[in-house]
Length: 187
Image 1 (cartoon, rainbow, N blue to C red):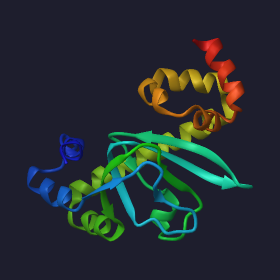
Image 2: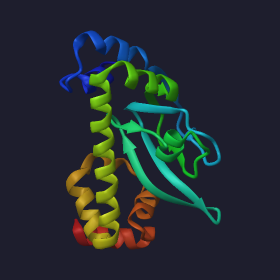
Image 3: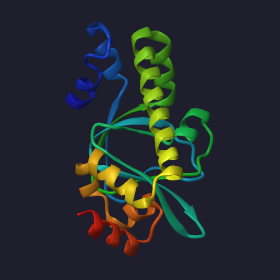
């Protein structure tokens, strides 16, 4: 709870509202290999990761296509499924034993309606998420795999060390063999 609480501190949320907000989140453990969200199912939760690593991926022709990996002190959700409350197309799986604080969709809607400060925080968090997605999309179109790897190395060195190579290769859109060459050239 400490990590979640510290995430909200200093974000303009009055102290008297913090307990209501954090009380809306429930603790959950997810063992390595279990899913937070699955293709074909509706995602009911948004979560804050306090421990662990998660892989976002799609299945195409029986092959996993990893799009994103996230870890501690990050929010976790299947974006389209959660906001549309419809079955999703992506999978989110724990790559390590994980611990989360999660909030149900209906509780999140209630918090947004009852707390103007939380609503402002929430909008800001969404804006940051959208900007990050836009930057990732642009990088996929503009940068080479080598440049994307170098950028990850600069911006997410700790996370990069935790990502299994086959998933990192998938994120970069290259084969594991090509990734090895990239790593040798950059190191």
